[in-house]
Amino acid sequence: MYLEHVNLVVTDMDAMLDFYRAVFPHWRVRDEGHGEWYGKPRKWVHFGDDENYLALSDHGEGENRDLKGHYVGLAHFAYVVDNLDAVVARLNKEGYAIAKHGAIEPFRKNVYFVDPAGFEVEFVEYLSDIPAERNLNRDAQQSVERQQNGGV
Image (cartoon, rainbow, N blue to C red; front, top):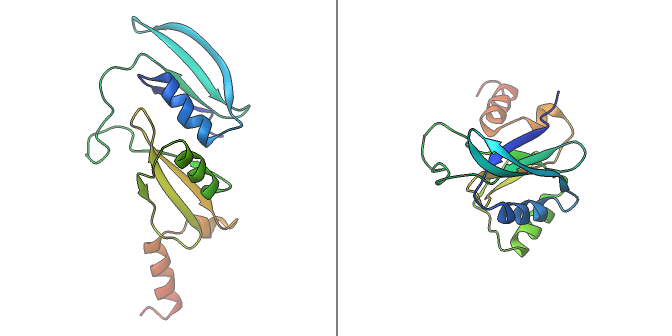
């Protein structure tokens, strides 16, 4: 099983495509069209590669949820990338700044950006192929270290 796509409702399709083209230069518009969503006309685009894509629909109204708040909704979604520095450089070149840095972890590095629609997007590069290391967080790591040191 894998996640094929995420469907995001936006107000500015072109700005979203510019952002995600900077992230994934190999992605393309796979399909596009017009339709209706619960009585409202919309344009939709599938932007991705042969395996994964973002479905973007341009019929959005209002603002995205406050990312610093605690309302129910999407907090962020994440992409695993092979070269985090290259992704950051491409986004910086296009004028996008890092919204926040991830925690310092021994086996991964990550950053967060906010896309033009206000969705927080995490990009993570794993520095290990060992699942136990990739999934280790600081609290778990400290617990393992305490156990290795005789429970101190």
